[in-house]
Structure formats: structure tokens, C-alpha cells
Image 1 (tube, rainbow, N blue to C red):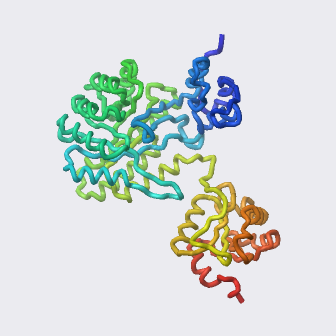
Image 2 (image 1 turned 120 degrees about the horizontal axis):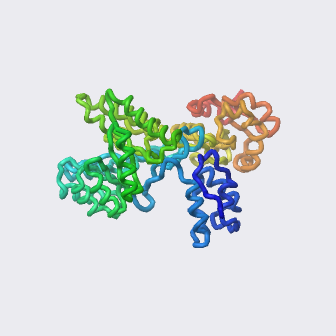
Image 3 (image 1 turned 120 degrees about the vertical axis):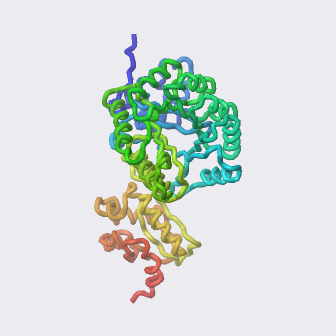
Length: 478
């Protein structure tokens, strides 16, 4: 009889644990060269077992179920929304980011209320859907819309939900403590699989019935009462609702400390005490800052922004916010991006030659590394100055210029090899190369190894434009 498969801490799972449960046919249907390569990527969180087509066959059902048990994260994954825009929240394997990559970045939902005039509602939806910011080559956006019932009228709420759904394909959250109002909204947009907010100790049965009827995930709300939250998750799970999200309450000022402590205590209970009843995604609601008696809207928005950043840091898997000001939202999007990058892999761009403007045989040739922040900073400075040039991006493993030079990830040999590999000598008639100022100590050896004459550029890419104006073409040099 086969041994029972039990869920392990992700750090205890090896590729062999996964491999022995795979079909081991090396069929390559998953896109990997063999089953061991697939197992390794599953353990690293880069692939899921669902991406192995043979596992979907009846003959491998037991293996599939055993793998699902093995790879189930302590914080369950919950999905809301449909199609390509569906959102996955939770799915955390570890308490701290340095232990293992965090997956499923914290989505940010912006609220709309059912008391907004039609034009204001349309404008707010448009602003949410079009909010976008390019950060080191990545487009950062908002993720969902939370529809709030403020008029306490099922018909009005249903009409608002229908209007929102007609204008955007973003995932939706229906917000009301009234089962009648939630039911009216679900009757209109239940096929979009919205997240339902919220079940409380007073309405849990009615909300659970709606969640089961429409196959929607359900938020469990017990502000500042972890024991009640735990009891309700047990009750709802036994009732049949499996997709749950926990709302331990978000209190901003002066209770932000206890709020963060509750979020932290819940996650500690899951990872340190193995408490499965609290192993669900956590919802933070920074928009509660707007309940403050504070008169200044700027101050309230600042409190909301601070709370959002703290909640992302302290394990929130989903946020609902109100402000659409860039200075409130951009810090959250950038902070989220940084937390949810793989700490084992520097953020990098592909190496190669980039062209700016319409370069010709006499255009400058510049060198940089493939660290994303370095590259996009240089790119921005080149574009803003309307410089026509070639930029050779050397593969330094995603490390910045100064660090790459110090660690010998950027060497004269690597620069010379990049010039040969990308056939830079065929792009220009001259043999002059502009090296970053932070790599100045490589200039002599680079000239010797490559045969190119090196011009040491500025230490900061903002100085590229005046340097080229003064020193290009190089024949002007004395």
C-alpha cells in the first residue's frame, strides 16, 4: 500500500518528491525537456501541476490528487473574476519573502458606490481601468473594482453592478452586509464570479447560500476578533463554502498598530502553529481611513496610503482603496512590484543592441548592463535628450554597472565578446566606444582586448547628452 502523501513546508519539498508522482514519460507536452525539469520548476513555483497534460488523464488521477496535496500552500489560493482577467489571491508558501518567492501579488481594488450619478460612475470606472504606470519596463495597473451599497436599495445596487460590468472586464467585488442586496447584484453579474463581501456572525448562513448558489468566493468578516473569525471559517467550510477570504478588520487611526498585529498573528498562526482554519487570503481595507473625522482630504488620503503600504508588508492578499491620486497609488504599485519579484533573480532585460532614433554608420556606441533599473534609466535619459545612438546591453546577470564591475560580472572580455556577438563593427564605421563612468577602470584593458578606442562617459546617465554634444564625433577631441 502506498504511503500517504502529506503537505510539507515548501522548503522541505524537493524535485524528487514531485518527480516520483509524475507520469515520468518525458513526453515534453508541458514544454520542458523532461519530467525532472518540470518537477524542478513546480517546486520553484514557476509552473503548476495543472500544466502537465498527462496528469489530467483518468489513469493518473491518484497521482494528481497526491501532487495537489503535496503542493497545497498553507495559505490557500482563491480566484475571483473570469477569463484572462481572473485574480488569484493568497497561495503563500512561506511567512517571509527571503525564504521563497511570494506569488500572487496583492491586487488593489478601487471602490465605486451606488449613489454616484451615471456620468460620475462612468468617469470613475474609466479612471480605474486606464490607470497605468511604466516602472522599469513593467506596466503597473489597478486590478479590480469594489461596488459598495450606500443607498441600501437592492434595485439600485443591481443596476449599478450591471452598469459597472458593462463598462469594464476587471474583476468585481460586491460589498454589502445585506443578503438581499448581494443577491440582487449576483442576479445581474453572478456569471462574472465576483468576490462577495461579507459574511458576518449575523448573516453567514444567507451569504453562504448565495456563495454556493453562484459559485462565488466569500469574505468572512470579524473585525478585531480572530477567535470569531476562526470559528466562522470552520462553520462555513463545514457548510460547504471552500473559497474564503478573511477580513480581520482594518482600523487606521489610532488603531493601525492593533490592525497590523491581527494580520501578523493570523499569519503566524498558520505558519508557526499550522492552523489550517486561518489559512486563507487576508483582505485589508485602507479606505476605512475615509471614515476619519479628519477634515483635510489630503491628510486622509495620506493615511490611506500609509495603511496600504503597511498592509502589503504585513501579509494582506487583497486591498480595497478609495483614492485615485497618483501619489497615493504609485507607492503601493511599486512597493508591491518590489516585494513580489523573485529575490533569487535580479530584475533584468534581455542583452543585445538597442537602437535609438535612426542611427547610422557614424552614430555613437554606448555600453550598459542588463540590470533593469540601470537600463531603463539610461533609456529614459537617451530618449528625453533625443540622442541617436546604439546602446550595447551586456549580460551581467541583472547586476548594475558598479556592482558588476566590482564582482567581475562586467569585464573587458565580456564587453569585447558582446561587441563581437552582436556584430557592432558592422553597424558603424568608427571604433569608438563610450563606457559608463562607473566602469572607467576597465577602459585600458577593454581597449587592449577589443581593439576599440574607449571614451569614458559620465557616472550618471543624465550626463550622456552634454558629453555627446561636447565630445562627439571623437575627431573633435584634441
